[in-house]
Image (cartoon, rainbow, N blue to C red):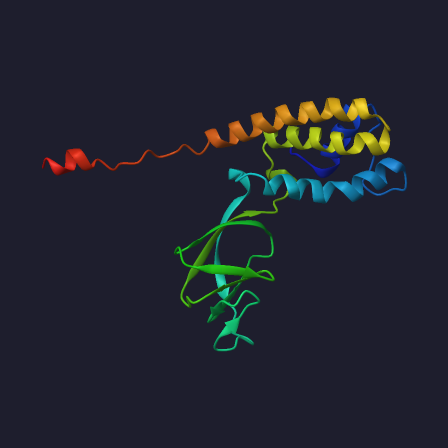
Amino acid sequence: MAVTKLGLINNALILIGDLPLAALSGTTRAHVVSSNLYDSTVKSELSKHKWGFARKVAELVLDVEGVPSVTVDPTGDEWSARYALPANLLQLIKVDPSIPYQIIENKVFTNYDNTLYCDYIADVAESLFPWYFAKMIEYRLAMDFAPALRDSATSMQLMAQQYENASRMARFTDSQQHPITPIQDRPFIDARR
């Protein structure tokens, strides 16, 4: 069964002892709390780690419209090119090729005007969440929902502990899917040849 927004919210509500929702729209306290906290909470969690399932690579589009020959930003740097960032970008990891750049107002400013790629964390749909990430989100939502719905500091503290454990395990599980390649530099062996 695929992970859904309603499913994540309902599991979080069940964790704090509340009843699940039949739909996302409504006027109950649970509806108001979940609709106001869900999106920012998920985006925050996606931005905290280089999650493999949310990592994307895209070619950036050179923004030629309205770019003066030299753009001076507030810090005094001069840039000759501007690229638009992807609309679903939450966190930029790197640009390729590796060049000096600065992000200003969702644009990448640089002195490079050729093909430029970016590696980034995207705002992905719930259906792409692996189970370890979904479980972590459930505990995080429960931690955030508890004070607003249950008015219980004890419930919030319990969910915070569960969230910390689930977060640690989710990062560990995700990192195991992307092994580190050891450095292949062998200067002493190469010097003997």
